[in-house]
Length: 283
Ligand code: AMP
Image (cartoon, rainbow, N blue to C red; front, side, top):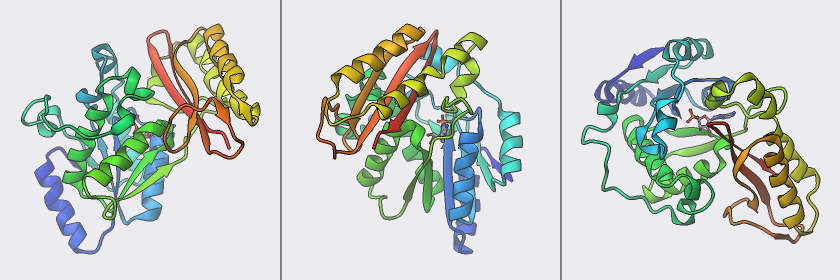
């Protein structure tokens, strides 16, 4: 695996590879890698001929400075994991490399309702930051395919919009990969490392609650099961930002189900200071 810290060196190398016919797959991450991330590397390796991973903890997507400060870092371990996964190239830029003109940007992405719904509502500015960094990374890597996890359901929709807006839809194929879970159902996440032992036990309630919604879904009013799901989380000790049943393509909340509409349940909740998100397609 080759490691690049400078975009100019990365671009030069990738230009040569592209000319020699390599198809480039790209997996952007914020590090603290786990099997979920490695599953994206595997997906890229099966669909392309050169896999690039980036590790960059992007300051502009953190609406809470404390969350940014506490974001786990484990670069040496990450490099070892990427090597064993057979990743070809790691891009490891620093903040100056990614934001040479400073962190504030005049560029505004039109994210429509994604900006005010769910994560957009509870993390103001988050998706603008995500688009800022992903847009910059796509200019640097110019991949043929982009691999992202369904774990971040709304983020996948936002990136799809970004690709449309930047005219990259045809050029870059977006692959949305399934969520990898721990044996008890907890979605793998870098933030899980911050859970203490007791909270790690409680954290499984998120998946149980999503499964409860899936098992109890019936055509008609959905308010009773949604209220019960919220109560289950609160009773377990979560501070819940939201747990909702939503339309799978618009993310608009659904309170009455006609038995046909495609639905997804999405949740964001705090255990102590750790904010966890997850989702489950319901039908
Ligand atoms: P992050 O480092 O958390 O920004 O995540 C980098 C990429 O890995 C994103 O596309 C995530 O959706 C994806 N990812 C994170 N957790 C998982 C998981 N448990 N299963 C599959 N993909 C994941």
